[in-house]
Length: 118
Image 1 (cartoon, rainbow, N blue to C red):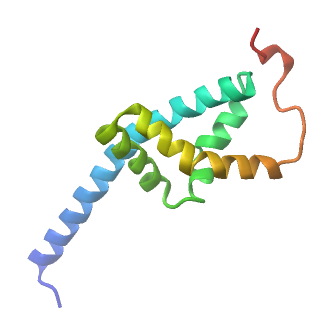
Image 2 (image 1 turned 90 degrees about the vertical axis):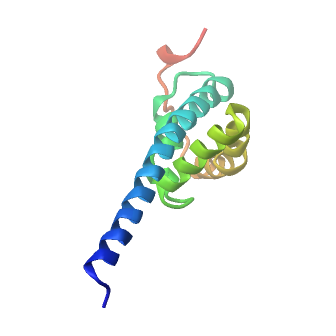
Image 3 (image 1 turned 120 degrees about the horizontal axis):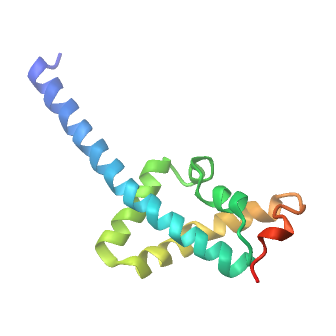
């Protein structure tokens, strides 16, 4: 049986790791949001909030693993290599899954005409 001191040390190490992941994920979430908004504007050409949400939600990210871990990876990539590298990571890991899921969605008018960009 572990002593109280070793259990506390283990819990503290776990807590520190979880805190680091959440901090990295916070940055990663911001990078993911910027990438997704730019993608929607560039590729879809409309202010499509539902599509943005589908690209960034935890429900979507869980297909790749724990959402916080996925966002933390994005954050680490950004911190280590910059925005272009983080966007490249997203293009490689997130975009294919998003496109696959979008292809399975029933076609309907998601975005009112008033949200179309000039």
